[in-house]
Length: 171
Image (cartoon, rainbow, N blue to C red):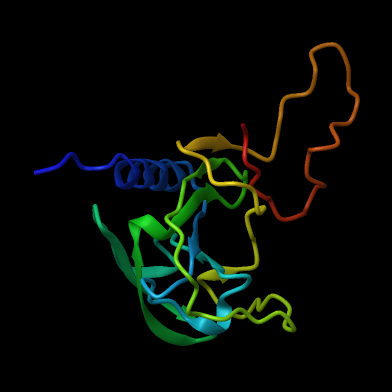
């Protein structure tokens, strides 16, 4: 028997950290033939899923797959996401989380380029990761950085108040 990957353990740990701190955990998933997600909410081959306890039902985060049911635009859907397709997990409120390498496969699910984000669903949002080369190890990512000790100069990478947090890859 081969060694179990660390990725499912890191996903579960960050999920627990988000919930314990009152944050809303979100998964960024590469939508392809291995994923069972609502195609109408896929953007650029990705979907961001709210996996907070209040947004999902019967969440199971196993070593091979993450499964749950959730409502999208008021319609209950069964979601199945292989661990290999998870690109990131982060806290919506702070943007703190982790990105992961994803095995590439030709996307089967087409994204809607002409439609804006749909705010009527409970489990999806329009946050996308930047398109950069895949990394070989998980990397901590954050949207907020500490200001320099000596001054109050604005940080150009700091998000605007009230805006959506975004993930960035740190090299």
